[in-house]
Image (cartoon, rainbow, N blue to C red; front, side):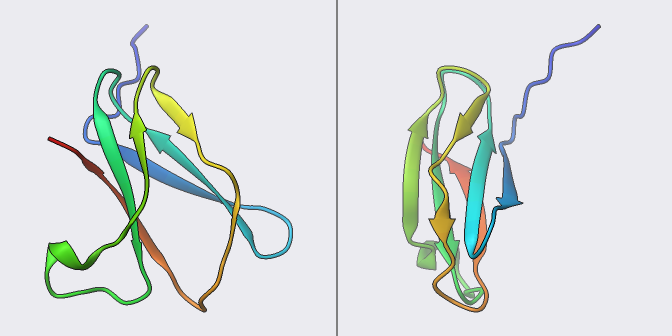
Length: 81
C-alpha cells in the first residue's frame, strides 16, 4: 500500500452541465498553491492571472464550479514560495 502525494501539484478539470467547469487541485499538504488561467498561451510565465489560491490542509481542494467565458482557456497550478 502507498500514499498518493501530488508533488508537483496536479490540476484536474471536470466538465459539469452547461458551460460549468469544476477545478480540483491535488497537492502536498502544508504547501500553498496558486491556480492560474489564460485564454492564450503567453511567451513568459508572468502573464498568467491568478484565479484562486489554496493553502493545502489535505491532499485535495475543490473549487466552486465556474462558467467558461471564453472559447478556450488554459489552467495551471503553481506552488507559492
